[in-house]
Image (cartoon, rainbow, N blue to C red):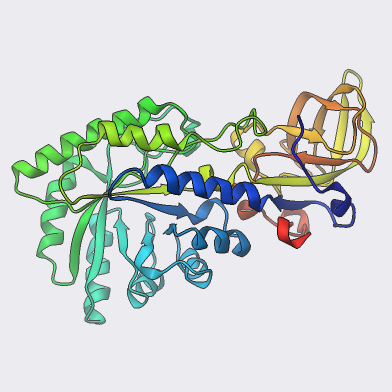
Length: 385
């Protein structure tokens, strides 16, 4: 079954564009709140890097989620769309002074600190403002994830976080700093993770770390396990909402929280991926020697994931009900990697047909570029049409 699209309204919109099904987004948010709400002290933040369309952010903030930011620009985007500063967490290996100062001025919930050098700078900048910066230390747990190499973040050789061997001395340094309040620990092992065993491995490592810290009389008020839950790119119609129940239950069963501890999550892709589609129009049907191409007006500038990660997205011809034929779906960019899919079955395609590239709500519009001097695609929500 194809997704349900308001095709008549689409015919009057310049392609390519992003379309977001806000009914599905709200259902997804309801599922998150329902399943997280079963567990005392679970706190969910939305990872703004997945999609920062202001209309999408408004919907998410109204659902009560916090915001996970990785830049000063994302902090501004969060605050301008209704996320309270008290629910904003800020991570990133390269926080510049102006971004740190912004977080201090807005009194965000905490900085997720990724190095001792960063900790020292935050302490210095907070001191100049006579403020106390609340921080969690991002620890690199050296836990692998079954995902693409470019989106794993928890291995020892990755650039993210503080090595476990340095953890004790950095916590000690933080507790001695006059303008730092140590709130807890932050972890994140990767993205598009579908195997719960990866999260179990993280829980086991955190349990070891907590036991170690308690032996040294170090109390941790907050544990942040990041995000990483993936979505079903192959069956977006059959599985439009991820299995949040199993995800949250995995942590509830395997992570040994202490009394009063809060467990924070930073979900991004799982919140917005399935509600978004990149809608493009076929320009030409090109007959090759051994294959045929659907050449569309969207390209890797509009959705870079297939070129960058060899990522799969289900593609549908939403204008045609004719029998299927096999095509390569390619864009107009002057790069050989500007290919959305090879040898896929689509309903017989013609010039002018609308083609929907599914599960594009995460890392789609937000990563668009102006390479080849192309326009950034507009994003529309259901209420716009």
